[in-house]
Structures are given as C-alpha cells and as structure tokens.
Length: 324
Image 1 (cartoon, one colour):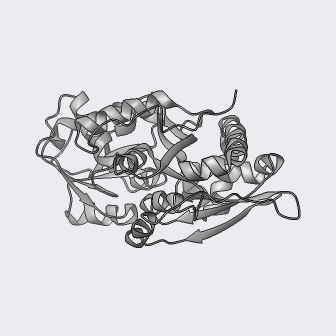
Image 2 (cartoon, helix red, strand yellow):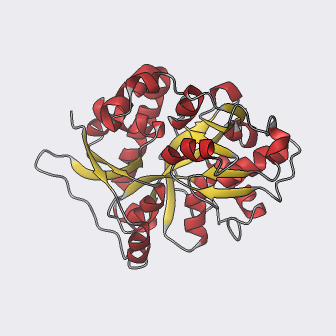
C-alpha cells in the first residue's frame, strides 16, 4: 500500500501571488505501475484522519490513484496551491472556499471532508475561559476578546452565529488571531478573555482545567458540513476521471472512518505525530460520504450576512458533482 506523507510549509502571501498566474489544466499521466500520482493537501487536525486512512487501506490505489498527502501549516496555503495545481486537490473549510470563489479564484467543491453533528458534548470545537474568569456564562462573552486562529473566517463566523443564537450581542466582541498552540498561555497571561479550541486543542484545553462555555460549531451550524476537498475548474476539466476516482475513494474513506473511529485516531497518531493519549480524548467530526451542497448554501448565506463574502456564489458553477 502507498502511504507516503510529506510536510509542506507554504508562505501564504507568495502562494496567493502565484495563484494569479494559474492557467489551463495539466492532464495527469499514469506511472509505470499503472497508478496516476495525485497530491492532496491537508492540515494537522483530526479532520485529516479519513484521508490518511483511505491511503493506508488502499481505497485510492484501488481507484488507480497513487496519493501523496502533503501537510500544510495552515489552510490559507492550500487554496492558492490548489488553484495553481501544485496540489490538484486539497482541503479547506467552507468559509475559505467561498471567500476564494468570491475573489474570483477558480475553486470547485469536490467532496465532503468533515461535518458537525448535533450533540454539543461531541463537538470538536469549544470556547474556553479560565476557571476563575469573571466570564461565567455565554452571556459574559458579549464584548470579550476571543483568540481565533485567523480572523474573518470560520472561527469568527461560527462564534458570532452561536452567540447570536443564544441571544448574545456580538457587536463588541473582539477577535485576536494566534496559533492554536499559543492560545492556552495567552489565556493564562490575560492577553485574551477566551480562546477557541478545535481538536486536538479542545482536549488540551480541557486537560488544563479551562472552563468550556459553548460548543460553537454545534450551536451555530448543527448537522452541517463545514470542510471540503476542493480542486480547480481547470484541473477538473483536464482530469475528470481522476477527480471522479478521488470522489469514489474519499466516499469509501469517510464511510470506513465512520465505522472505525479507533482506526481514525490510530492513523492520526501515526501520520501527524500527535500524542496517542491526547488523541484518545478527542472528539471526531462527522465523516459523511458525498458532496453536501446544501451546507455550502447555509454557510454562504451566513457569510454574506456577516460580511465575509460579498454575495452568494452561482451554485450551478461551483460543484463537481459525483457520477451517478
């Protein structure tokens, strides 16, 4: 089985400049072994589990693909890399995808990555405060300074919608960008009032005794897909069979991951070098097969309302719909 993983740290600014130079699609050719090499980019989160698992189980190989998973330090590097076809397929959250489309980039949705369920206790995302914080409930987050990994993106949107759904005025909420790994220390120093933690950082925050206030994914967009695999329209036009093969293999990977959560955790430990004891404490996203178009529409409408994109996209143009 082919299970090659490399780590790639990309400079987002440089990649965005290169994205403007993207041209027509290049047709991929099979190697001597009959497999077509395909680079797929992900980030260092639990969401990468089904992709790594599908490679390890041979699902992509059975579809004629030799998948190399590359790891980017941040999702912001993946979208321009996909547009340039440096990584023909990659992961990004739905807000990043929609923002790229809103900016005129050639981005198409290919397959589901990860979704939110309906149980707050099983959510992969939470807002935490210190146990002795003056903020003791959700209402106290009005006017709070909350750390997020990047501003004007999925964190801000889900937090604002979750708070609004709970009757909290978000007009004075501030968001401070920083790496997830830096957030606990910033919270303890008092640099911020609250932090947004996603797995495996949610488990880390709980282990440090921080107080959870709200599960912002579930409280904003329950039963909604929030992360997708994307490609460029140029690549999809030049390589329709490769894209279709990826979709079939990714569906099998998501189905297998759903049925085997322990294997998801095992492959995360193996491929991303995250502590096994910590991974055992994590919640997992919902991994559903297919391409969830309705969730894109839900998030797009909210992104317009919150000023993160200028308008909803043309939904007839942004999906590479699976065969059948």
